[in-house]
Length: 285
Image 1 (tube, one colour):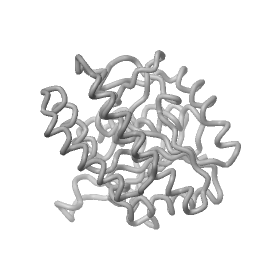
Image 2 (tube, helix red, strand yellow; image 1 turned 135 degrees about the vertical axis):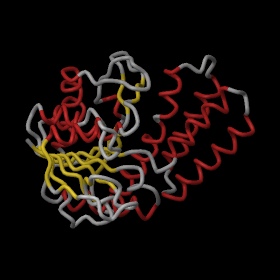
Image 3 (cartoon, helix red, strand yellow; image 1 turned 120 degrees about the vertical axis):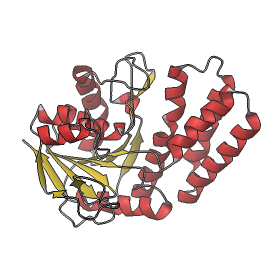
Image 4 (tube, helix red, strand yellow; image 1 turned 30 degrees about the horizontal axis):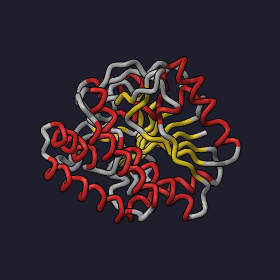
């Protein structure tokens, strides 16, 4: 079993979503795969702005943001589920009274909800059976809104019960990254970069063989290769080395992401969506 996570840049347009679907389908031919997806690039920031507009009663500004978000997703795929999700989001914000952190987390989770439907529909269009899955059905968190921590034992039970039936039917679950839910169902986000954490948590819960974190660079470097071509490329790193880089502020990994895979010696690869034949960086013991 392989867990694959695709970041926001990887699914930033119709063409890129199709590219991701083709990558996933290639692996699907020989493996059971679970896909975790981020929001399309820039969408989470727009949802944060939308939340603030509703909170300050700037309904004209909110309407402009909704139009922009709707058009971005409709251009990527004209799917009826997008209309339903936007309807739910607008109704929720319209009825919202207190605009708490819990409300905030719920609203900004919609980027991943939308992209999971787009990618799943695209997979089905190219002949791979797929279903979008809300992470609240698989990942159990504490109630620390905005920076939640996953409760591993409860997540294992919930992830197995919700995902195993799909995998046994050779269906690709496309799961929303970046958030989970408390035991009573409240959405809790996992912090920026949280989709990496979602992927490694589910790898632990499902006893996966491997996690592939698909990014827009060829792997992990000592700095930003786009700004400094002399930076060092790491073909292999230990869990501890990768964790140290993340905790030192390297944006390529979520600071908690190595912990669930290290516990079960699961291999992690960081690869480039736009250069999939590059071997990338391997992270292991």
